[in-house]
Image (cartoon, rainbow, N blue to C red):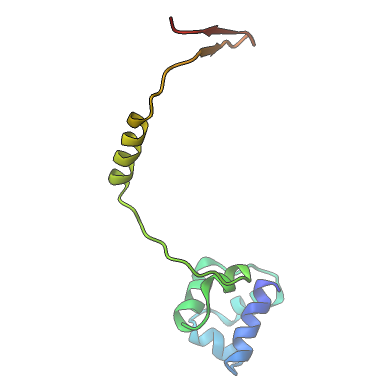
Length: 113
């Protein structure tokens, strides 16, 4: 099912006309017509207005056609970096070999003593 088909399904499920739907989500009727015909792809603003005005519509389903549930938690980047640094320190890393590539296509390899 294409995205324009999902938009059509939302309109039909809410017993609305295309005109009333466009008015409700505050877009030009011609813009809706172009999306429904497949001439244009809906913009992020267009999709956001649908999601804002129809809270029962799953955003993932509207965009991709599949429903996903999940939690997103924003992590503190400083905390994440500190944790990664500690993990690197805890691993006993030793340099095995250093390889230098030259612009003429050759290379040199060095091993620590």
